[in-house]
Length: 481
Ligand code: GLN
Image (cartoon, rainbow, N blue to C red):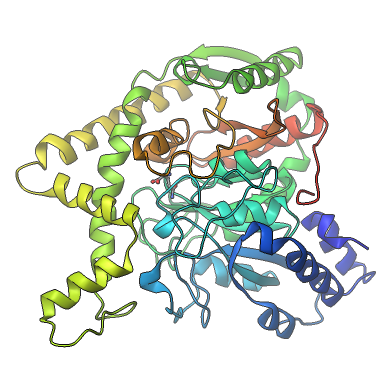
């Protein structure tokens, strides 16, 4: 049987009712990986032996792939970077610990833009990952490997991280579900830091229920992350199943006019409007809203995220761990410089330079401090909007998957791929992308839903409803399940 085509829920049911063993399922997943991986390159490290050895007889089972910036003890954690090429994690991230308790089997570590900086998974030291809908196109990023692993049936679910859209954007471009929870909902302990005030771990899945299921496992208070909020545990998967007409008819949904600006691909705009019309017919109240500071979001993000990154990445100095230039007769400073110069790729160096510049004493007030103030205004836009509406609907991306190489030499164009996902991170809100159709080339389009802080369950319920009732024919090919 082709177990790789089944959802997490279906696989769990088969294991629970003892119709199939976990080993049979894993064998099938690894066979699938063997078939498609040479063309897709979704993984940096595969954990075949580890996963087969960690099987036991209980009926808990979550076969899952993990983005390579989340630590699994004893396993290489490269962040897609040469500087961590041989780094072996010495402890489990908290999310890994929580998943283990629920029977997780870690299938492998997925490819990503170096240190999660990028929107295309082209900046990885370990090669590019390809979009399963069209191998000449990028899968989105930075969690491109996780998105592709899920879309192609290599795994039913995966973890990623989202600092400015790195879960929702690749999910949209690969036709899968991607959830970024509220900042503070999921522990970042053991997630390699990029921009600490924005980073959140989240989930990829092929349907909303599976995403809810994994999200509820990792949404747990953790004292080891001081920004993790002690918020009651929620059963997202049970809640999505309870979605009913009354819930839907009582919803008020905001459509921000700033998210339908010029430059957005026509078919994306049309599809999102189709979903909005469909919801309106189902009795949802739709309201046009304004998030007036949206136009500053990308600029604010590209000051704050590099500033935080330049500080977080100072630890990679060729001394404590990671790549070291062993050249002879080097002074200490020369060794630092050379190790960093060789260990980091071009985009990471660009961010470090941007960040140290905007934090330097002469420019701090003009850039960093100013950006913090505008971040607050963006936050307040959302708070104002959520006084009037329960959820916000918008496109996830301005375009569908672009060609490999198309934007890699044009950082500004690349940065604009996250124009619709970044504001959510700046405000710390939960967001999700769900598939809602295709463009004329058969490339997936993502619909984004944003919710108030800690209202993940409301967001998941609407997503579940749309998935169940807004029907469109799925495009499959030999790489897509
Ligand atoms: N593409 C954005 C960046 O390069 C977001 C990345 C992310 O969310 N990790 O910073």
